[in-house]
Image (cartoon, rainbow, N blue to C red; front, side, top):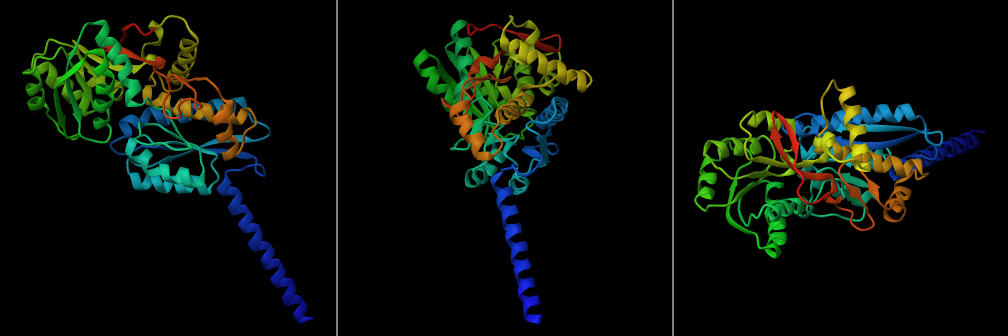
Length: 389
């Protein structure tokens, strides 16, 4: 009798162990066929220095979850956006990625910064989890999709603007961080064939509080335009120093300055300051189009939920990443592998708030149809047509 009881106990224990292994395997594959919830992971800098970029992204997650809940279940499953704050710490971004993978997220959108995106990229590749990066990155991979424009794509509308205005001599200044150093090589590659020359190049530490020395050196080279490749707050400091030195030529800032924080930094002293940003910032000034309709919906919904605040280009990256995954899920693709196959072969063109995506042609960037050169007028963005429409 005791032997039989012991054998029965061992058998039950084996069943429990096998059941736990199967559960762990299902979580790791991101296959929620046995569950009533589909999780989409989101890794953002809600706190820490990069929270100036992450704030609108966090708000966008809240907005999208509200819209998802309003639409209801998909094939009997609830869709949940699982947000993690990595606190502007790359190590914590990796910890968040591990947690999302073990919890069975079918895809991950993140992270706010380039460095954090690169830190979580190997995990996505190893575990075969579709990852939608929110900042430019230096390398990609089979399961990696870029929501932000690559430096080459960002440079295209700038080149068009310079051609249209007959400018051929460029002064260039950038932060010496991971984002700042990406712009010049991409720009020079395109500029060379257009007869545009960089006559001066200076760098600064991203935490610097004054760039007067670098700009003074650039001024001695008599450029026709100054291009800045940096994030706020450094981007705003460069703009203020530029005005203080009495430059009477245009300055063009990268997409990293396309936020309200930059406008607040330059305040009323915005003459000749231009920024490359999302068409969403100037949507009311755009001609009618499908993109205008999509951008208007996002902007109006965001403003309604967050008391008149406006989404920025960084918010649009999150919006597009989530919407791509939602489209895959709504068309019946509920696991990581199913979503990956759909992105590679079944999605085709996807019109996002950032631009048009086609991952079959290019996994790492949308087209530049969603960005444009903007000026600042009366404390707000002013649309400038630059021959690309």
